[in-house]
Length: 203
Image (tube, rainbow, N blue to C red; front, top):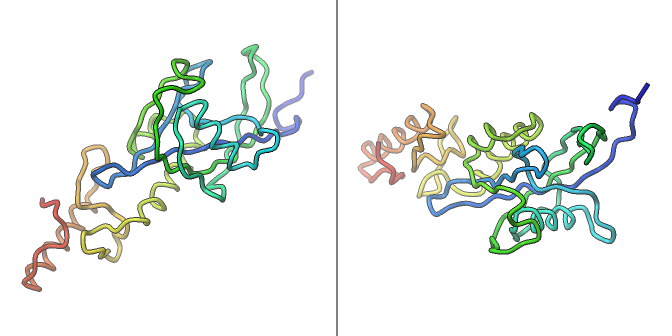
C-alpha cells in the first residue's frame, strides 16, 4: 500500500508572485500556466544550489515568465500542495514558499517562452483564475498590503473604514459599494470645506 501525502516527507519549493502597478495605479498580478495540465499558477520550482530562497524564486520568475524586478526579502506566504510528477500519477507533498516580485522588465525572450501562457490580471481576476485555494488566499491577503504602499486619494488622505481603497477609479471587475461611498466622502468634504474633491474620479 502506497504512502499517503501526510506520510511522505514534505519537500520545499520557492515561488514568486509577480506584480506591477499600472498607469492607473491599479495592482496587476501575473499568472502563468503549468506545462502539464495548463493550470493557472505562479512561477515556482525546486531550490537552486548556491542560491538563497528569494533569489531562487526570482530565477523561476525569469525562466518561466520572462520577468525581472525587485524580489522581496521575506516570504509573503506558504502554500501546501501535492506536486504531480512527470508520469502523471505519482505526486510529492510540497510546501511552496512565496516571495513578492515587483516587475520592472518583461523580456521578449526567456528560457520557457512558448511553453506557457502568461496573463496580467487584476487581483480579483487572479483570484478567480488561480487553480489552487492556497493561492487564492495568498493573492487576497497580498492585494491590500500592496495597495497600502500608495495613497487612496490624490491628496494622500484615507477615510476611516475604507482605507487603502483606490477609489479614484472604479473598475467593473472590482466594483463594490465602498468605492462609491469613499468618493462621496471626498465630494462631501469638498462641498463643506469649499474645496475641490480629493479624488479625480468623479461619479
